[in-house]
Length: 362
Image (tube, rainbow, N blue to C red):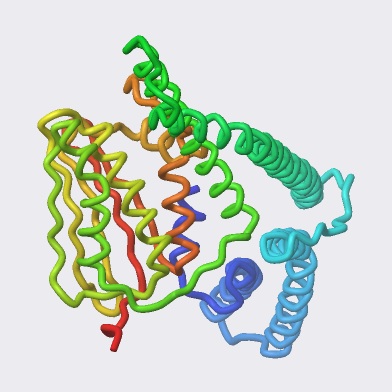
């Protein structure tokens, strides 16, 4: 192996074959040089004999080169087969069954690539089946939620009517509390249904966007204002730090939904007394928005669960579908942006979305 390492550091033409040529040249010419040395030492050289020896040596060297080139064919074919498979996944037809080392190399290459092609085909088939299974489940869920929405709207309508008491008081005060519970539960269920339907529409490419310059400070302030009551109830301090006039190319309605999802998550999981913030800045031709909190944070495994559709962390006690982050992620990418979630235990969580910058709207 040390000799091979020595040869590998030598810069020779023809690459690996050049090392064979060097060895064959030395093997055929060293005896000639030794014979010449002996003849010159013993007396006047027989130049006719020297010519014959030189001719035989050159002929042997040429034959050695041809033989080496032929012996390197299996190595070259195996290398070309591996390169072609890596580029196009074209399965080669190398000769197999030869008993020598080069033959075993070609056999091993052929069998390995065949097994790899079979495994890739099986993996892609399994992936297609898994994707189709997920789509079928999502379509079924969307159909179920659609069917649930009509009777749920009726329940909410009657609950609102009972709360208004247009035909007189309900009687016992507990009835009013029961109606309030029905209304709150119905609103929560309606929000879940809307999340599922929105996520399904995104996955099926049915969401349409109107990408225009959007002033981020105004939109972020609106999101914070819409969640002001929930923030107060949870004891979370929300701040918006975005320079006036900073704009991004986005769909205002979708971006507002993203900010509501991210800020709502921050308030849910940061804990009482925590702080949440929306900040934004221009970075070159892009705008980066960060929605962060100083809550307990998540480890890598929890981050993976949080980003999965319907993924929910089991130790929070919060209700939901587990679609807030996937919907935000999909909406950001649909607007030509990038989404990333960063967190660490004890260091809070930051959602970072990057969108194309824009000049302020006239």
